[in-house]
Image 1 (cartoon, one colour):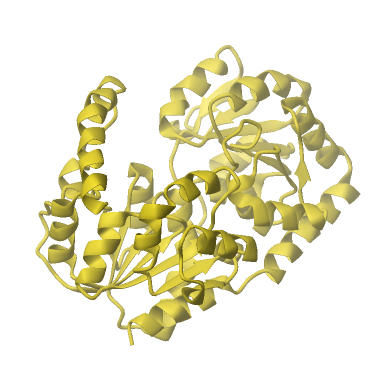
Image 2 (image 1 turned 90 degrees about the vertical axis):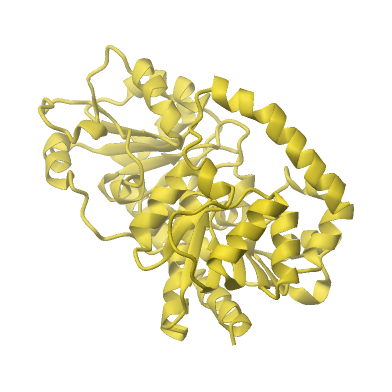
Length: 409
């Protein structure tokens, strides 16, 4: 079965390269993903995988706890995306940062030969058969942290259960966000005795207090106006939301597309409006600026503290949503659309405690912003509730770190 899987991988590679080239996708990480490195080989205690920006941020409190429990731990951190790589390099200056290897046998072996980890921990549900099989055969301890199986992904994983059953049995620990995720992992073949509910590490998010380099310029541009942030928006949402923004009068609006390839697309949607781009570092912009396009990487989380209200994207279209903890943790009243299956537990706890609001259209998102701006009592109540929900659900990072350290004993 593993042989069939690898043959399929090669077929995907052959068919996929022309597609990526036609789309202009960067292949600058190809060398490292194939297991070829310019740095000298060295051993590491822990291999931590965080696929992209969100996972790299979520791993921070776990890493902090590991550093406290076992200060001598050496770590190699991998990401899959270019944006995740940039975020990891900023957040973890003392770790080795590289790309996750392609799941081909040769690439995995070269990675393990070069970095020589003793334990592997992946954030979220990143299950790679060859990485798991080959690492385990070399005595690497295996842990899956913050595991979830969304309503949308669970049927696909269940379809692949014959292969996944063999892979999941190689793990030493699988830590899930909630009991429903635990039962779903067992249903696709994970041994019940290795699966436990540890909570969601994203509740342990600690806001980055480092000031933005453009903080003073941004404060001057805002000029005391209310601020509405559209965070992590994706294709289909900007097209719905931007026309509705005209209803917000004397409000400073910050739009932060999720993916860099959307920056220019969103800029074109804002053409003709009084808009500036954050990548220009706010130099020479007029003080009556109405819209700011956040076309930089890694600044949205610190930008939320300027907001009066926020919308979290990936949720008005069927994409599963993005993390509402970042604005909630700093007490920003937040709304999101109905598609939040990727953050089901977080969304439910916020909604159940009146700490966020679900909206079903772009118009409702703007209605929410207007209410938070005009009704200070409603704003303050939701702000307090958001901070409280985040504080009451902390602790998963500590439990996750403890399990990882146990594997290194």
